[in-house]
Image 1 (cartoon, rainbow, N blue to C red):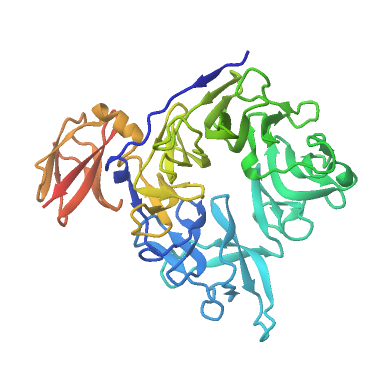
Image 2: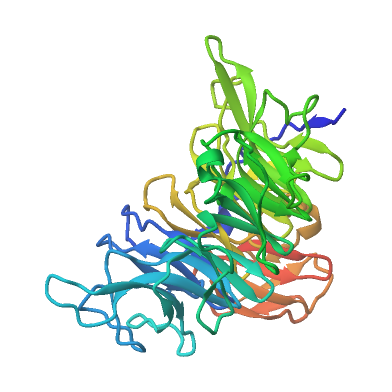
Length: 512
């Protein structure tokens, strides 16, 4: 019999410990207004996302990771012309479907490719990338138009090639080498009616769609496409009849040599063949005919994380407790990680609803509800789960890693900001650093200080250090000189980070 382990998690730490490492990137929409950030993507040098200013114009925000280096570009028709292409953008579009490919960020914009006639704008959807060679400035955004006529929206890497499905035409899947015009994968036309969702499994694509010849019989199901030969096959009529099945990128994940997917609220696996397609685990475990895999599959460290529904007695009706689970294929075991309950209604069903996963620094981060029904950013090591900050709500956007920090969309719980981009720096304050506080502890004195500080309790008396402002900017760095650091800083609170021989250590101090 397969085993299931229940791990009760201690949650809801409060106070400033978790909040010190989390700060607002920039109040783009100013005050309580929402900037509506979405579609975050990061290169080595810039963070890019779709966002709005105080005028509610949904356009492009580009940042180098600092407040001063974060710019909103209002690309209104007739008022903003791209410096390289002479193109005027369409206000209604904004940035869409961004992707990171070969170190560059690519995204869709609608633009006017000729001076439009009055009342008859001649516009086109195009694929762009940002030209970072001239740096960032507040009054110009240099972009390069890569190709047009397509609307890429779901991506996957296959070697050095970018595969994408397009919302235009018959929603075929294209391949692009980053230089030449995209090409449709062979044998798709008149064969596959693609729904746009797909993943790469070895040399095959697992595609949600239908064979035109069988569409009226099976509906939309999962298909396989051999990238090398162009051969097309089906994994079976998993939902019997013409109704078909429904999939999304949140319901399909590749782990090792198998693709996992959610079919009728059950977890299935496939090796890319009909014979190798089956439901994962059956009776005697969490994954049975009673409990359900709700959504949001994510592969991390050879395991599969998901949002699971545990059936509970709700009196007159059946209710589900939605928590974070992990499936270990090697051991054949399912582990429940969280047991979060609604405050004041302990013992009843509660939807923690984990989603929007991102891995960073040996931890997995995700958005989930806490006991007060508000969504926050959580951190898990695969065993326990902890909220990062109780003072910042998190939105339904996947966090991204940029310059050794985690960027996510949220808003302050006190209402002082609308939705904006926030930054979590685990080196300044994190769950792991608190759990390992004895190892990382050292003393800064005098504190408060003026002009210099001494450090005590470190192994390397000449270790490299950085001083951060509370907003997260580095204001001074160098090497400690015989346990002493001299500085010239304005009065305020700062965080001293030291790269000692056994750990990166942080300590807050005051300048008077």
